[in-house]
Image: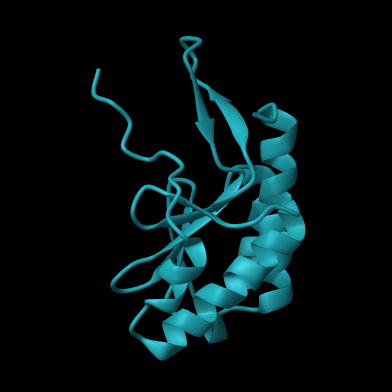
Length: 140
């Protein structure tokens, strides 16, 4: 089995965010980071070269393998900001209907700009995901 590339690193999340070239994306990412930090009460950490994660949990695969993982995370991508937050699908569906303009793939939420979504709804969605993660996966 290939080794997992997404691991917590010692790189500075603040430096990573400050290096985002597009000013609006940089501001949006800093706002998302502030929400996630407030909810998790954890400082941001880099997971791999381009994911900003918060908190630590133990992800357990169906076959029993375990890996360290973040509770919440996001990544600034070329065309959008990807939030790794939709774990509790049933709880998230009503919130997603009120969120605004986004795309979804798996447990990822893709937002072009924070101005495209309702920020209080996004915050509730992130909080619901965190609750689901903490209930489902033990802290690392």
